[in-house]
Every structure is written in structure tokens, then in C-alpha cells.
Length: 386
Image (cartoon, rainbow, N blue to C red; front, side, top):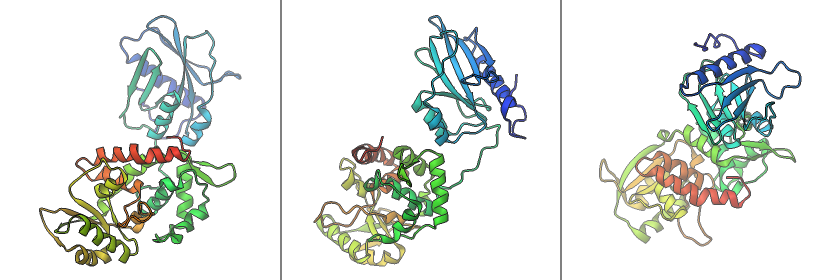
């Protein structure tokens, strides 16, 4: 039976949605050859029903599992947070009770939250993860949505949105209470100022991050970061590293002479030059090593860099990589190390992580080292759940 129907032509709701989701659940269970004796029934019409569908599935060792299915026409991740703590008590004393979320379309973020809170899920396209603890897991993803997916209300790949994400994620701000107006004006107050996003853009991004449960409303007003790791991953996946121009150089300076020249470059550019990628990680997560020197330098300071570092552009054999950023946001809260440490700043650890992840080679491995050795411990130390 093909239950895809024409559900994409108009949104289903109420009884029609429950029937379509029940038919899809039956189709999925029917497709498991070794599974016998299951039953799916609608219970949502009962006045005291705790859930909408009940699937009874025999367990290999005897007894039954009860899949208590909550059907929703739409659910933001922030809404799932409120739903996740519900406890279901179906009749018949099943050995296992499994809460299940059913939607026309389940986003990857909702699927993540379901896994974290012990919920199973499925959608009208047949994508699913049905986890019967101690018995078996049925999982399948990749089916094309048969439901019109809501368009994201914000694009995390833009440079303006990236400025906001950096401000929320840097470890110095972990646990900070923000307001939208504070966030808008924050960038112009820095020692190395960064262009301010508009208040309208801040509002748009903040609403999206709240819907996705990356941030949470604070008890005293405003909002705070809630899920730093998952927000970092979402930004990482949206990040457009190809927007930065890459130039290869050959330099003769080494060791202290190179370090002193770069320290002077950072000073003379007002902080708009920084160690990046692998070179930043050498300071921020010491086990990370790579032979080339990696820097961020603004276009208008490229000639000053070439003069101070005595570097020449080359087509091959580079030992120094300069990234010309498309936005000054990469210099946000540069990491200058310990007091008295005479060196050029590094990109902040969040920026370093994203750059490593996208630079190829052993970059992903180095990014994981940054996450585990630097970011997670700092977030945890400042009270965030990682």
C-alpha cells in the first residue's frame, strides 16, 4: 500500500492527519518481514486519551511494547522541549512503553532532540527511527519529503548571521544573558570593532534560534545560549568557507623572527590580522600540528603583511597560507593568549574550529581536538550543558 498520497497538495490536520500517519506506521511495520502480530489503532478520539495512536508490537522475549504516538501537524524543536517530559500509561501493562513523535516532516534537529530524550519518531515520507529498548531498532532516512517543508526563517550562512552566532558561542560569553538590542550594539563596542547587524536581522536570527531550541528565554528576560554544541554544528554545516580568498606565500622568516614580525603586523593593523586554522589551533589545542603557517589578513593590509613578513606570492611550494576574509567578523574577540604574551592574536576558538573543519586534509580531526580539548571544557566550566 502506498500511503504517500497527495499530502503535499494541502496540509493535513486533525483526524485526516492521524489516519495518514497511522497508515504510514502500518506500512513501515508491514515492511519488516520478521515482525508479526503487531496492531495499530487510533485512540485520539477518546476524551481522556494521552496520545493519538497506539501500536502494540510483540517482543522477542514475550510480552508487548506499546508505541504511544503523538501526532502533530507541525512542531518546532522548542515545542518538543515541552512535550519531551510527558509520560504515557497505556492500558494492558506492556513491558515497554515507547513515546513516539509523528509529523508530516521531521527535521534533523527534531530527530536529534528525540534521540536525546528517548523518543522514537516517523514522518509521512516513511523516514523513521523506532527504538524498542532492549529489543530492536527500526531506522530509515533519506526518503524525499511528501510534505512542503517550512522555509527556515533565518540563513546561518550569511556573514551578518555569523557575527551573531560567534557572539553567542565564544566561551567568554557562555551563560551570558542577552537582549536583542544589546546583541545589536555589542560589536561596535569592541577593541577591534566589527560591523553591527541590523536590529531586524538580530530579531530574525534570534527567533529562529529560539524555535530550534539552540537558545532559551531567560527567567529575567532576554535569552541565553542553551545548546552550544548543536548550534556550533549547525553553523559549521552552513558556513561558506569558500568566500574567503586563499593566497599561497613562501616566507624565509622562521621561529622568533616570524613570530615578532606577525606580532607587529597584528599591532599595526589594529587587530585585523590573526593566526587562523592550524596555526591558531597550535596555541589553542597544542597537540594539533601542521607545517604551514595560516593567517587571516584583510585585503587592505596584504601589502603590509608582505613587507613585514618578507613573503612572496607563489603558485606552488607555499609554506604560508593567507586567507583574505569576506567579512571582518573572523577577527571577532581574537585570542591574544596570556597577559604579556607578545604574539599576534589567534581567531577565537569557535572560528578556529569551523576553519579547521572546512580546510581539508586532517582538518576535521583537528577540529574535533579543538572541540574536545578547548570548547567543551570551557562551556562546561561556565555552566552550560555539553
